[in-house]
Image (cartoon, rainbow, N blue to C red; front, side, top):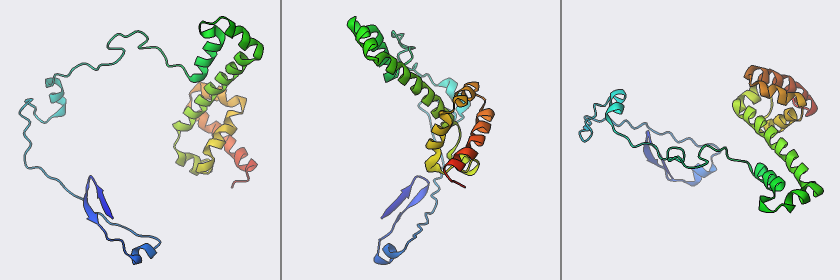
Length: 189
C-alpha cells in the first residue's frame, strides 16, 4: 500500500497477515520540505511581491454572459417548480393549458409546492449557517438527526418569521429552545 500527500514523503508498506489482524493500524508520514535556492521569473519582469506584480501583469477580461452583454445574463435562474407553474398558468403557447390546470387543481398544487420549496430553501440556508458540531455539542442533537430537527423547526409557523429577520442570534436562540422539545419528543438526553 502506498501513502502519499503533497507535504509528506511517499511511504510504501507491505500488508501482512499481522497487519490485517490488527484492529487499528497507524501509518506515520514524514514531512517533506522543499527548499528552493533561487527562483527566476524573467519572462514577465516580476519581483516576487504579489502586491506590486499584480499591477504589472496584463490580464484579459473575464469572459462571461454578462461581460459579453448577452440577453438574460443577469436573469435569476428559476427552479423547476417555478418553471412548471409558469407553464401551467401561461400555457406555454397553448391557451387551453391554464384552463385545464385550473380545473384539475394542478396550478394550486404547484403554487403550494413553490411555497414549500421556498420555505425549505430558507431552512436549508439556516442549517448551513451553523456547523454540525454546534448542533451536536450545544443543542445535543445527534448529527444524523440534524435534518429531522430542522424539519421539526420548519413546521412551526414562528420559525419562518424568525428566519426572515436574518438575525443569527435570534435564530440560534429559537433553535436552542426547540432542541429541548425535540429531544424530549424523541427521548434523547
